[in-house]
Length: 211
Image (tube, rainbow, N blue to C red; front, side):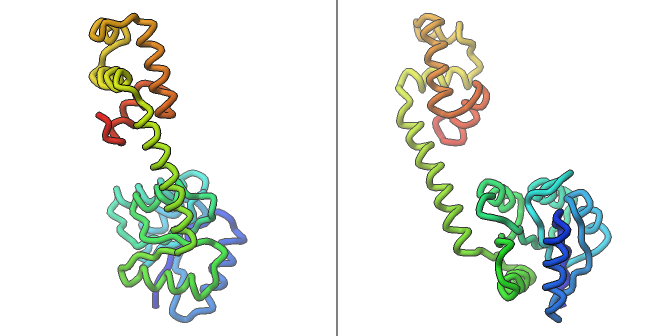
């Protein structure tokens, strides 16, 4: 018997999933919750083998609940329930410790297979969702590569000085440029890296390995 906790904010969806799982003798839903905070309370009281977790919920969403589970040592295999529109959130859930993800419109057999797989300590990946996410990641990587290539040598110098904590005035003095020229170069850097401010530009540059 695989014990499951179901965390889903939509009553009809939650009752539907619970009703379907009740048809299978090998699965038992031992707890349910309608948001992330309530989900954590349930997990503190019961010890399931698998958690079925919705991503978009009030109070605490799926990502926040996964982080909270990690911080509290609630290392329970978690299957994220998702739609095709949740690429970034699915990735965030996987980084936060989720062991698999599944669309909500799958068959009962596939849902049970996923639950069984996680209960055995293995990950579950759905090819259709995987291909969409990988395509999404590839598009982001391509855009980032274009951004790096578009930065000029002087813009890279300015970016490194920004990372070192230099003001526009100090950068202008270091590079023998006018403050206006430096200000324009900073604007170009922010636009090319698609960020809103200097701090985010530095963080993205570090992430991309530029500095």
